[in-house]
Amino acid sequence: MSKIALIHCGCHKTGSTVFQSLLKKNLKELDYYIPKTFRLDYYPVNHAQLAWKIIKDKRFNDLNNNLNEFEKEIKDKKKILLSSEDFSLVLSNSKTKKEFEKIFSDFQIIYLCFFRYDTSREISLLNEFRYHYRSFKKFKIITDLISLKINGFIKHTIYESIEKCYYYTSPRKLVRSFLKNSQGKFYILRYNNELRIKDYLKQFKIFKNFDYDNKETEVKKIRRSYIFFKTFIKSKKIFINQIRDKQKIKKLNEIL
Image (tube, rainbow, N blue to C red; front, side):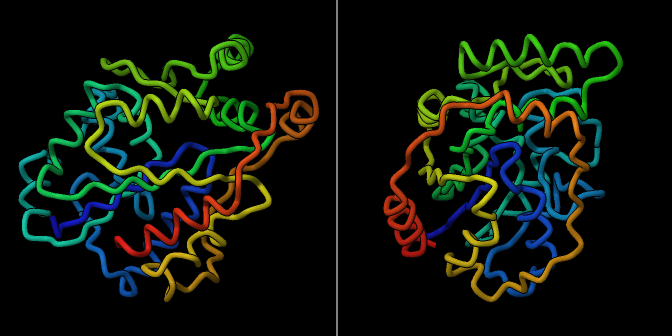
């Protein structure tokens, strides 16, 4: 199968906005087609609307975007690239994963996924929730933290969606959930605050000609409360063999 669908699926809080901004800035340097259907108009490159449609998220309200148009757009393309951290929600549910991968049945599906292996996994995810919770619902962060500590995952409730989807802070459970009955090939790479997403992308041949001097990326303001709680709320640091990451990137370069 010569056709390739490279799908960047997050995870959340792993530099996705930086990656998507670099994609938009370097479109002419990319040998992959980035579909226009299901792209958010107010984001650099983010196909979140496709994820929202699959999980039946209430945020999907664009009647101009439909699967027939999307499939027609990518039909004659040899290499396509999509990006959205919300694809990780789609992949956390076997039903939505199957529906999602059916769209790319003519492609070899390659998933590029980044996962936090440092001690800030829970607090970084909770910080994301904090931006979306309104008024008294912000106190839900306390129960969210307990659930993440005990279970290593939590249900997606930031916005209403019919399908059940999950966020993971347990790498073992994430891998098990993503790989289960999947038709795609996963390349899950470590992410932490010290190793920037740009440092990773520079190792990929398809991104080698990118201009990485990107000053347009907006970074959400980190409140003092986040910095304070970060010193107390820490995940267990996960050891990862860095050689394995290099081997994964080498293998990806051979495929892409």
